[in-house]
Image 1: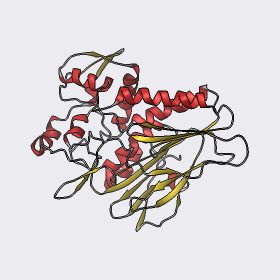
Image 2: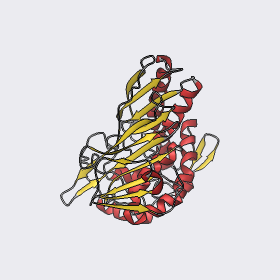
Image 3: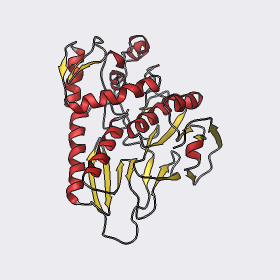
Image 4: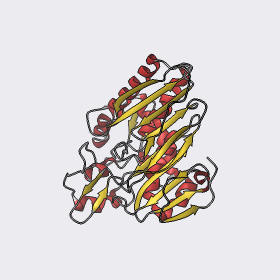
Length: 342
């Protein structure tokens, strides 16, 4: 369910005027190119090195199909055996528990076997792996439950042999949260981290908020928002990672409840200072679609959300409406009721 190649956010102009030049770093992580910009007090190449090393370690530990600590855990779960894992994976599990519950299962790392069955454990797009339609049809009846995971320190087990973990829909949010915390400990005051489109900010950009733009699924830029200290803008979409089947195009975002790729949702975005919740929420919003968007935003306590449908209706929370500067008017606008402010 990772969104690196289809993320809907692009960083706008970053440089402010005056002061020393920013420290900039580019590296590959989670299947995408990450860009890190450090400014002002504390900005240094060693601080950027620390962030790059953090992401390299997490990428190696959390990869859902190449050999990693996560795939070794999944093999143990398949065998019904307890497994001693890493602190970072325990953190992923504990961070995900309330998000699975709050999303009503629309976000669910226990659906790794389903994601693989659709051929979405790949770096080559469009996905071309044949799909076992009969297995997918049985999925809702045999769906494993994230709550079946039992933890005792670093020891993990589950009585559900069908459970395979895939944290791609929250990994970037957790890693970004940890990266900002690391930069703060290094004395960095101002930074922007762009993980292939999912963006997290520290401080500001030379005395003004960081500006990031939302990519339009129809091409170009839909609009932009200003990010303040500690905030992140995370996105999901249906337009870059998919499989082209004879009957229709199927996006890589899968509904863990039905077992089917989503339909009707073109792009989503969530702005929040809770970066893992924003990351998981963007995927859950794609799954929720038009009919369940308001309920999902309320249950996940997300005040700044948007969902763009395939027929160009923009569903927008009151909180994000006050922060979003549209550059293109969609066919229709719908205001989602209630919700906290950003």
